[in-house]
Length: 409
Ligand code: DNO
Image (tube, rainbow, N blue to C red; front, side, top):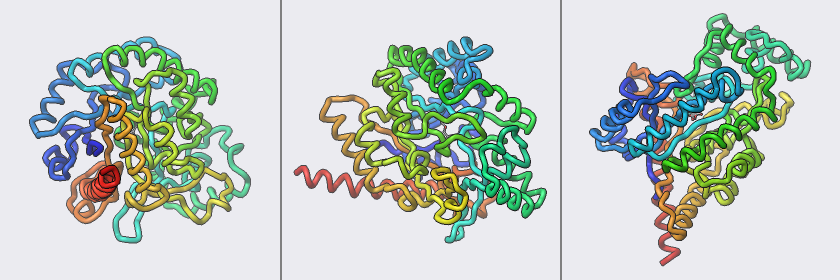
């Protein structure tokens, strides 16, 4: 059975550690969110946070994330110092007995959505990325120079019509949703700062970002390996370039290239089904079968691509999508879970020690008391929506696992 974990944003998270216990997860996924991006996490603070988690009968299973400073991604400014600090964080975590670290290499923005409360047919709300709204923001709010070359005349017309149909408050909300930082992203911008941050990538295209990622891995992997910490890179979300910025962890080919760049078991993946799953050309079950030995962390969530409009929108692959119930949508969750359980068996047969294979129910709808309790939960990180997700995934896992055992007997 895979380890059931739950993301917790620290003592201020309205979903408490006591709540997590009732949800039935055993592992906590968290970070020292109060420490600024790029700085060292002191050992005492790590130990203190770990003790708090353990006092609640839980374990600190995965760090998500140690954010990678923009200086490292662009290899500019003080990046050497940031690399040293990153190594020190890893060494300190190892000393506290924490062995799995998730991170991402998305430029400027971490995960991105255009709507945090999109009404679902059942009365709950969920997260959505709408390509037309995003274009409206990019073209007419941000007014990014060069953006017009990314969109056809027809797309620009649709984006303009979208913007014209929105109230000022809606435009403000859209802007905030995109640039003010979603939970865990550790970056938040005003529109001016955002333009400046994008400017840092003037000379960093696809090739350069890949090289910078591999250079980062060449520095960090040996240190992590020497102290027994596994690294798990989170894919791009959405899994395609946005805002003219390169995105280099969106497909199986991208994942293979980065695994090969530093071919060590330490250098692994966070398999996020919701992110990879937005692209129909990502074969999720096949990815588990082919790359599963390098999965150190798993996010289970489903997305549903818009069925209408995208053909007219005209960028094949750049889908609008919304977050579906965990067992529904475009992610073949039953097959994914089956493949993950098989990967765990393979590890056991090979005598590997990394059998935990921590997964967390990623995101969840806002539903039932999430909608009415007045608790300000983080977008995507509700109590009840995730509780439903975890319960469904757990049931699936138990059922499949007993079937696998019965077939073996
Ligand atoms: C969103 C999360 C991401 C993830 C980072 C990992 O819900 O999955 O913010 O934590 O990309 O570094």
